[in-house]
Image (cartoon, rainbow, N blue to C red; front, side, top):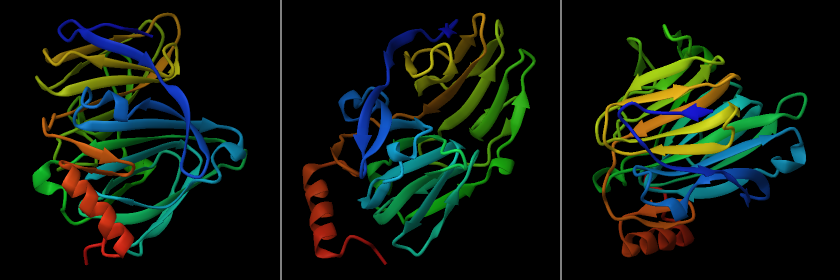
Length: 277
């Protein structure tokens, strides 16, 4: 995948790396703790992609979150989930779950795959500003048929989870970091041009084709991104958001602004007072 920008220059490119999370889920870490704050307001991106149930079926048993949003996007397979607020359900192929942990939630996510054992998806973590870290938790469940897909004059097909392309807006709106989250499929020898807000963090992640597993982080200056496919089709996620430019205190599934806030969160979790009612 040849990624070039007429205004936005490429700042850095790197490959995702294999890791194990949860109760033994094999996945690829695109970025995380060691990349902070390069992708502010985004904290972490994981890709789970396997045809072997043993790689993912142990899942992510009960664990807490505070101070962040987790965005789960499933391409193939099912993910069962439930939480401390009594919610439960299944995220299916093409669905998105945009969870705002806010002041605290305890949940579990258990990948099930499809009938052939295939499981493929992503989880992105977005930080919350200090003023809203303790907001009430909430879910935005978006099914595949609620996500619009548009075809651009250049030939790209774009699923719009959050943001706007060619006058069509995605279903996830009114998010504090003002993000865009696009799933772009581009035929061979075609280009995709997209306007982005000056100063916003922008990255592209190769989902399929040339550049698969590669993250491209763009410089902050400029208002346009251009992606061009070579002789093979490509598919990539294009994500942008408004940087918070705040201090980060992060350990495991909890992200706060100070070490004292982080300590308090874990003390409350141990004491059983973590969930605000």
